[in-house]
Length: 254
Ligand code: G
Ligand code: G
Ligand code: MN
Ligand code: NA
Image (cartoon, rainbow, N blue to C red; front, side, top):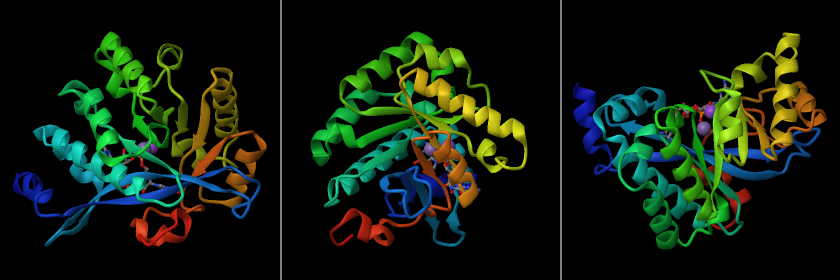
């Protein structure tokens, strides 16, 4: 309850910030894996509690409806930041289900792109299947209109929860992000390797690109590159950090 109230003033107080985690094209080694973009990840720097992880405050923001305002701030901030990079890398932003069901998401994305000057092809919106589960027709229409703006859509956390193959058939995703639960078990159990291999083939058959999340070891990267996975994200490539830590990658003086 207390946290709820504090969260409602967190934006005004400048307590929210974005960390960025690099994504790389999957090469046979870290050195051969070129950085192609970043996922923006929200952080709440609470004056007393310190850094509250998004797993703790995003659900709170969703319950209270604050996520709509917060999501708008996050999207604007990520686009504004990315537009300032000298090197035009991608930026990926997570969307919550409430952002799909409340307000005019397509209009918001459009106006933020215009306002920040970020070219649409540099923006990727990450959604989980929960977003689409409630109203199929509306979800499909929204995705089509977002894509018509020129932005890309990723299916996040694929393989966790109830994500099903019918989603991949029905919705025009550009990218599938394989949940890190499968990646962590690569090399530990053969089932995970079989699943990851199959998802890569499936995605490619549907003309979607594949990103593996939670890549922590060279052995995992090696397997993924060998199997044709397009991109990787995880501690091996880089931990989420303020953009200043990636100044050499994005160019300029962030
Ligand atoms: O950064 P961390 O690994 O703790 O993020 C945990 C989860 O919180 C992410 O997997 C993501 O789903 C969610 N998350 C992080 N940042 C955002 C955000 O800006 N918006 C939404 N909706 N979810 C986020
Ligand atoms: O969008 P999503 O909910 O998947 O956000 C990614 C989350 O995964 C972030 O909270 C981030 O801190 C976490 N993460 C990113 N890379 C790694 C990794 O290599 N290993 C583990 N265990 N977690 C990671
Ligand atoms: Mn994500
Ligand atoms: Na994810």
